[in-house]
Amino acid sequence: MQLFMRILRSTVIGLLVSGALIFIPAGTVAYWQGWTFIAVFSISNLIIGLYLALKDPALLERRKKVGPAAEKRLVQKIIISLCFVIFLLLVVFSVLDWRFGWSHVAPWISVLGDALVALGLMFILRVFRENSYGASTIEKMEGQKVITTGPYAFVRHPMYVGALIMAAGVPLALGSWWGLLFALLTVPVLVVRILDEEKMLFGELEGYEAYARNVRYRLVPGVW
Image 1 (tube, rainbow, N blue to C red):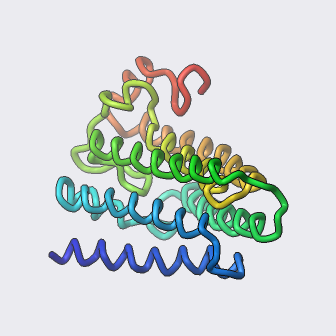
Image 2 (image 1 turned 90 degrees about the vertical axis):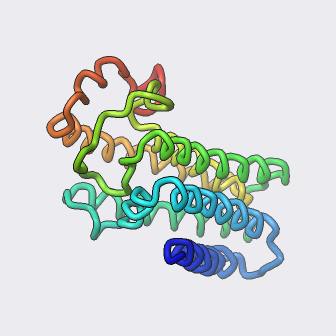
Image 3 (image 1 turned 30 degrees about the horizontal axis):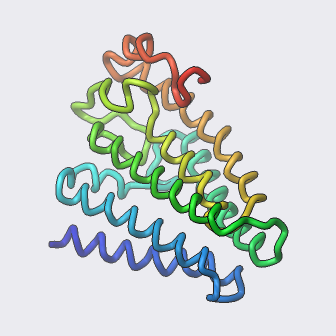
C-alpha cells in the first residue's frame, strides 16, 4: 500500500509540475494540446509505475534514485543535468512556439506527437519487462547479468531508443515544429552518456564484450 501511495503522490506532483511548465508559459488554460500531452504523459508514466509496483518493486525503488546527485560518475552527473535542462527547455520553448505562432502544427500532427510520447514510454516499459536492472543511474548492480533478449537482441541500449521517440513526440504534441531542435539536442547528449556507460559495462559486467560483438549497434540498427 505504501508503494502505491508513493506512486499516487508522484503522479499528483508530476501533474502540478507539468501543469506549471505548460500553462504558465502558454498564458492560458485554453490549450487542448497542453491538456492532452499532460494526460498522455501522466497516464503512460502511471502505467509504468503500477506495472513495476506489481511485478518488479525492486526496480521501481532503483528507478526512484534519479538525478545528478544519484550518479556516481562525474561525467554522468553533468550529462544527466544537461538532460534535465534540455527537457525543460524543450517543453517551455514548444509551448512558447504555440503561444506566439512561430510555427503552425496541424491538430492531427499534435495527436501523432502524443502517440509518439505514449509509444516511447511504452517501449521503455517493454525494456523494463526484459531488464530488471534498468536503473536510472549508471552503475553495476549486484547479480547483474547481460540481457540479450527482447529489444536487447537488436540494440544494446533500447531504453534510450524509447527516450528519443518520446522526445521527438513532445514538441509536436505541444504544437511546435521549432521545438524539434531541442529534441535533436538530446541525441549528442545520449551518445556521450552511452559511450561513458559502455566503459563501465566493458570493464565491470561479465559477458558484455561478447554481447557487444554479437549486437553491433548501440542505438539505431544499421547506423550506430
